[in-house]
Image (cartoon, rainbow, N blue to C red):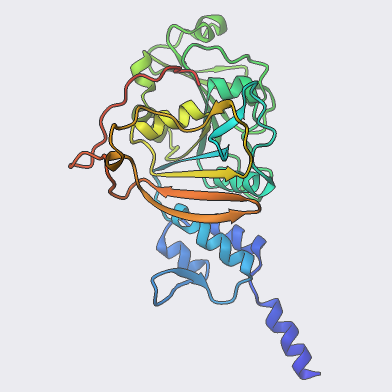
Length: 312
């Protein structure tokens, strides 16, 4: 009898996935990790002493992001094996599986802001909220230089999370809303904050990251679409990139990553990578802060060329 009770009590002390995730949401430093019960082993990795396999996976997968600091920019894309994020008609429901969608929601929960381009806001009408796991909604940031995203989109109408609409000074959104904002000014239009930037140069990824940080949004998730993620990647504005590849062949469609590449393979980006299975999909986590071929010697990335579609 005593042995059975002891076994039950031992199982009760095992940390489950739900509680592990709640603890991870509060981890932003080594001290936070210690408070969450994480211990550093002889191999240098942080682990819980008694945790379920699912809880251990969460710590392994998300602790690097939790401990990345108050200023970090990361991106996520889900794509087919042949590199497309949607069909040629824009259908993306769904390229990757349910586990990848849960992973995406966990990334949102760890971000202060989630960024999408105008193309994604128009085509997908995303909610950009945290629903598949515990966590607070990030501020939804819509990059829309030409003011072409209709105000009926969910990010502007559902009231579920704060939204920042980033538009150009000469866009229809500014004149049509009567905002009259000056360079860099912020207005409120139908319950949405509008940030008006003076020109296309102000939409450069590094400048956008700086602008968001000035508003207390230092942990930024760039979620889509492919052009926007590619612009941030090519500009050297990303610290981490998550790409989930599904075992599906689309053949033709909306491409994922694409930017002006090098002539020689030895100059291609080869960052440190971790792989994980998400059901039938494969998650690649690229650490873009590590040195790799193609970087200037001083570690500074060159300024990117103008993207083909600023509004994506």
